[in-house]
Length: 286
Image (cartoon, rainbow, N blue to C red; front, side, top):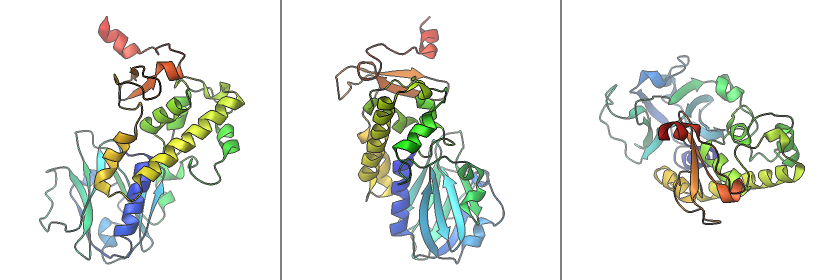
């Protein structure tokens, strides 16, 4: 799933390629991706793209005051083309869910692989009309989000720090991948209780989160949309690297599996050498 750095990279890419162009048409191949009906997507045709922004993991294309807002979810992506094909989209055929064609022949497709269709597209007059955006927590890279603000988020919360970092109503933009990376950089167990962290540990986690996200945003800067996924994967130290060597200590990267996701960590760096319990794998091995 694209997270804050990749979505910021996509927003920057759209600012460069789409802002200033006029929408020629919007084609919908999968009606299920549309979560709003007023105004309709066709109302964007003939209007100029005036901005591209990010709200957490949501992309927001400002089209002369109307907003095309979308969340790529786990299997969605934005596929840009300098010369879009004129072939009409076939509903229900292929991965393309929605196409935005611009007046110079360029544009982009929103695509989604797999059978679990979670790509969400809204056309609204204000981005905060999208409930998930209205309920977002602070952006960790906002200048106002300092160490004190982060400490206030953690204080008194009886939840595991991994879950807290991923909770979009608490902190926006961070998902499974960058929470793994920040916890590894902070040398902290993903199962640590947020409210029990002392001041020194909060300092370390805040610094690690900031560094991990800023480095990833810098790594995504200037890259075309097609390269952002590979840039994300190549920058990971533990996430998605189960069974490989930790780049810090050389221990094997371990995994804890859940029903629909998994986290990765280094026991030597993060848990004093003690592997975390993986109930799902334990049941399989019985």
